[in-house]
Image 1 (cartoon, rainbow, N blue to C red):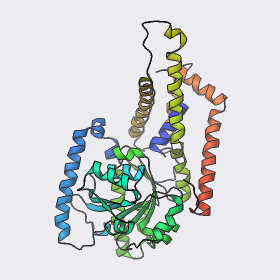
Image 2: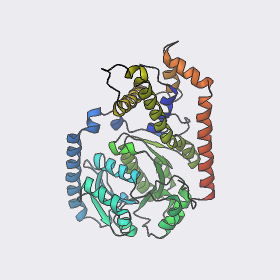
Image 3: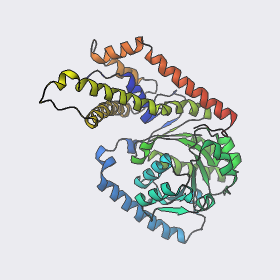
Image 4: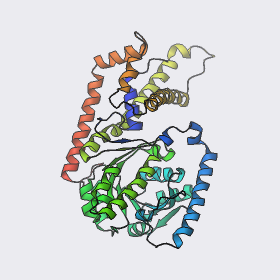
Length: 398
């Protein structure tokens, strides 16, 4: 392996898995059945078609059983049974992350999705989602209230400054609806006030586009398992436990779920996901360096020399880093969370060949205060995010 900066593996692991290096007091729940599946299952079109067929069959069967039941098909109505459970999902807003979650829901097989509803507000994106996933799964409605009325699990993915106004304009059913906010600056208590839903039915979640292929991780607060204890009586507690068990299975099916017990914990855990652009910038810097050196003046003097293309150099760099991350993920799975105090990343760093290129790169990067720069940037992101959350989400912040 050539001398790629090992410090950047930290960024890649942070971006792709978000929060595997959090404080041990934070609850951890990873969907091992999905994280350990083979690579060909993740990307095979044949597997995808088979899974979609299973989903459609499950939706047909669930529709028959629900026809004889109450028309209120909520998460509370779900019963533990050998067959797949079925829920209705709605998205208020249809951007990149919402679409990725919809694709992941369509691909996973743990929980049957009866249908996915989106509003016509983002017409082009909604139409594109329906075209790709099919008219039997995705339904487009004229307004957000119709989306809510036809859903049990409602995701809100609007801009931060629009969140309060949108939620206050909608009517939710406290006995049926569960609200999931994907707005980074939102707070659960304010979401509950704006939606008039009980706290036990309101959550905040952050994820990256990899959930579309079941390779992501869902960061959620409050902890769905602990949330069930908020019930006022035994019946409410059982309902919340059943609802949150379904949520846990659903989010684990997207690649894994990590829960933060408090919003302060979640805010800190969100920061690495904000370095995705930085990570891609690092990859581009590597790619450009390789191109300059491989296609230098000395190489061009050879008439038989074929210039290295940008596409090949890009693939090379991405696959180098992908290989590093695969190795780290395999080691993480081998540990199986047996020792929460072990430092896997530190172990990987120490395994670099003494006097080798990787050790040299890390030492020089540290001597140039490269690590300090990363720390300063993360602290800046945390300060900004904390300030926005404290002042409310009515300003134009991402």
